[in-house]
Length: 214
Ligand SMILES: N[C@@H](CCC(=O)N[C@@H](CS)C(=O)NCC(=O)O)C(=O)O
Image (cartoon, rainbow, N blue to C red; front, side, top):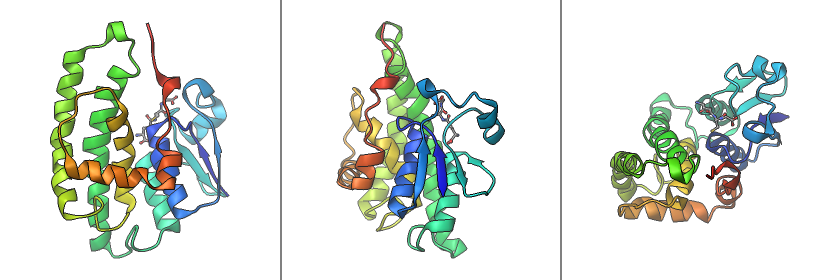
C-alpha cells in the first residue's frame, strides 16, 4: 500500500494526490505539515530530513521526498504509456514540460505571490512586489498560452504527468485576488481541469487555514 504524508492544502501534495487519483492508486494519506505537525518528529525526519511535505512510501520501499521525483516514480510504476511514455524521446517531451512548469510556474507563483498575498497579514503586504511578481509569472504563462493554442494539454493532446506539475498551480492563480492578464488558452485549459473530478477533489482545496490576518 502507498502511504502519503502531507496536508491537503499543500500545493506540492496536491500535485501528487491529483496524480494518484488520475492513476487510481490505492493509498493512505496522513495529514502532516503546517498546523498538523508530524514533520518535526524524528521518525518523519528520518524519512525526509527537510521536514517538508509530501513524503511517500510505497510498501517497504525506501521513502521518497521531492514532489517531482514522486510524480515520476508514480508514473513509472503505475501509469499507462500515454501518461508517461517508455520511449526516452517521447518521455523527455513530457518531462521537459513538467520541469518547465515546476521551475517557472510553481516557483514563480508560490513564494513570490501566494506567500506575499495569502500568507502575509494585510498590513504587511507589499502590493508593488506582488504586482511585479504577477508580471513575471505571466511572462511564463504566456509561453503556456502559446503552447495551449496548439495542444489540448501542456505536453500533448491528452493528459500527461506534465499537467500534474503545470495544472495544479492554476487553481491558486485563478483564485487569488490579483489582476490577471488575458490568457485565453490557459483559461480554457484551466476550465477543462476544473471539470475533472480528480482535479476538483485534490487541487481545488480551500486554503483558509493558511491565511494570515492582522
Ligand atoms: N521541493 C519540495 C518542496 C516541499 C515543500 O516546501 N513543501 C511545503 C508545502 S507545499 C512544506 O512542506 N511546507 C511546510 C509545512 O507544510 O509544514 C517538493 O516539491 O516536494
